[in-house]
Each structure stands twice: as C-alpha cells, then as structure tokens.
Length: 242
Image 1 (tube, helix red, strand yellow):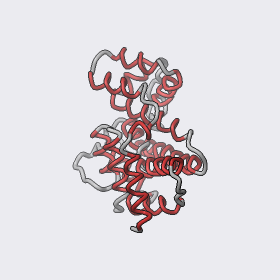
Image 2 (tube, one colour; image 1 turned 60 degrees about the horizontal axis):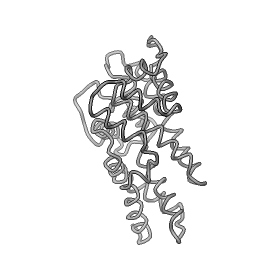
Image 3 (cartoon, one colour; image 1 turned 180 degrees about the vertical axis):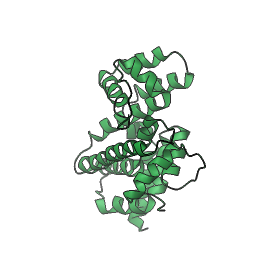
C-alpha cells in the first residue's frame, strides 16, 4: 500500500465509523430499531413506518417482490399485512437499504453514477438469488431473507465509495478515483466488515454475508448465505473464490 493509499484508507475508515454521516436520515431508523428490539406491538412498527409514506410504499412493494417465480403467495394489500409477512429483521434491513439508496442518490458525480451501478448490481443479484429458489424445492428459506442479504452483496464497495466521496468533498486535496479503486480491490474484506460493525446491522446478516462470500462455512442446508453464494460465484464476486 502506498503512502497515499494508506492516508486515504485511514480517513475512509474514520468516515465509515460515523454511521450518521454514512446513512444520513436516522429519524426513522433509530426508533424503528428500538421498536423491533423491544418486540412489542406491531402497531408501533407500523406507526413509525407510516410516518414516511415513501418508506411505507417501498415496504409494500418489497413484500410483493421477493416471492420466487412459480411460488403462489397472496399479495400484501395493506402495510400491516406486508410488515407481518416480512418479519421484523427483514423490515429493518429493507428500511436501512431504502435510506441508504436515498443517501446515495444525493452524492455528487462521478460518485453517484458509480454507486448507482453497484446498486443496480445488488438488485440484479437479489432477483437472481430469489429466482434460484425455484430450483431448490428442498431448501426451506424465506425469500425475503435471501433478498435482504443479497441487497448487501457488495456493501463494502458501496460504503467505501460513499465515504471516499465525502472525503473528497471535505478535503482541500482531491484524491484520484484510482486510489479508492485500489483500496476496494485490495481491502474490500476489511472495509466491509468494519462497515457492518459501524452501522450496527444484525448479527445474522453479518454471518450469512460471510457464508455467502465463502468466508465462513455452515452445515445448515437452509442457509440464505449458501443460496446467495451460488449466485455470487457465478458472477465472480466472491471475496473468497471457491
């Protein structure tokens, strides 16, 4: 690692550690997490999500999008039905992803275009992973767990590039994109793990992410990480190639 790369690496990691700077709007996420951890009345979760109509509409859309092709399942017609079907863990993951995408859309160019490319990739991976469940009749895994996990497939790259954009915006010195590209190529695992920890995402998501990228093994045949691993392997995206 060059001196310049080390300098940028240190500063990018410091930005990643500041969850408010990275994710932006915390007004919904903080009370939502508290309501979910309290395991109280679902109406509390509904009220929090309903306070943001855009998020509520997104949840309804997501609840109807993760069903694998060929799987007959009634569509959720109300927010309450959608949230009950999704389950609390998936609710938070979807909300986090929604606000992260909103934050990414605010980035200046060329970072916005680059990050949006990563985001499109995650959506395509999620679609492929959920669709692959059709060919796995013996696997008993929630399609939403597969989809929410897939939305974090290249989480480290997205967060690192976002942090780099903030760094360049606030620095008197403009760092070339080649520096962050080199760091993403060579320090992706470190950046990803630190991003998961700094942003306090649930342990199951972190563990299944490790399984998906072949960084951890499992004997659970119903692991969402194993489902995603196949898709990531075919796309050549595994942090630890097979």
